[in-house]
Image 1 (spheres, rainbow over the protein chains, first blue to last red):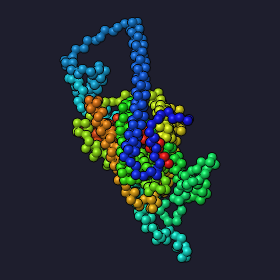
Image 2: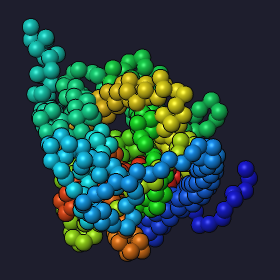
Image 3: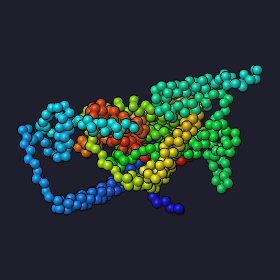
Image 4: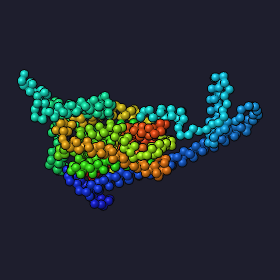
Length: 151
Length: 404
């Protein structure tokens, strides 16, 4: 190539050059940091863009799959007779559940406590379910330890 | 009998300057002790220290520094006058074992192959999940360029400045790659000196970094618990190495051997269809190259090259490079803490100095001193692997600016 794409003051040093002047040193530092930052910022842009694109497609896919499974459930429910729910009388009040905790989580906790009660022969009551503040749960901590052990 | 005694290595110690070899052998024992008893980067420090021992045994003839001196004014077949000619034919015919192994360093074969292995072992998931980590990896390279200033102020040559500065990248193969390209016989330091300083400081990361991290951050900043990273799909992990190779190699072509091999190794791992090759790159190949690289780099630490004032300068500037790199990462981490309104823990910034995974482990440890249940490790792995890419880019920049 006879002509260079960019034209700027040349910053080339010979390996044996000594007594580098202030201007040259400053140019090396500024050029070096600028190139490193530009290179990595370009990577941030590309990685973010394709990350968002894949996120979008994955969410769309998940939503479609959810809609399909719900439609199948509805179809199945139409044909089958609805059983009457048994009315269970209970002397303990329903537990106070904090907002944001799903029914599945409540069911799992209630089942675990019921199993503990059954094992000990005691009748345990679930009064309330709250998220612990600050610290992560024992299960999450155990999981984190397990995943980070190789490092 | 007298002739035999005169030909023995013991006589070599009594010859002119032989005492320097004894000191170097004692230093090699010290490094062996640090590697074996203290566990300081043993995989590299032990081969380096043994190479140091072998090369300083008089008359062992395993390594000949004079063979590696550039011959000036050699006219090549193409008619070009080469001032950096090395007679590899002579080395292959008359060189010792360590001379032959050193060819891989001088021809810049080992460092990219080590990068291949590192790539095959690295999970770039945390970096893809949080691409902002790249910024921390870039900031920590400040140590490289600011140390260039320090070396220049000490009146070192441009090649020496570049070789010492790259120690701040906290990446052994990169330091060896740059210094083996730049340094020549007119320089007062050798590749072995740079490698020794780089690996020693990498081993000392858990000691050097925490005081700087604590000094530059508040208790509140260190206590930030970061949210969980999003899960990264396989296809994202597959695209990443190809994307990085193309962008970085187009931008800084001299960084292509290091970045290209790093990303090739990663693609082998992520592709899932080359398990055998990926495992070889991670284990057998990496181990073989580590032995060759360590022993041959250790061999360059001849007494006449090491026991000089310049070695003291390298040691001093090396620790400055590491400290500035750590500080730059933390300071950008603090800025990101402010911009993100307290969602980013600045401690992960120090991991941007490469030294995988040691620097990330240090971020985790310092973070847990404040909140014992805080797991910063995966968040710190992002800047940590970004630092590897960043230091390879910085190496490319130095090689583009400083011409041999």
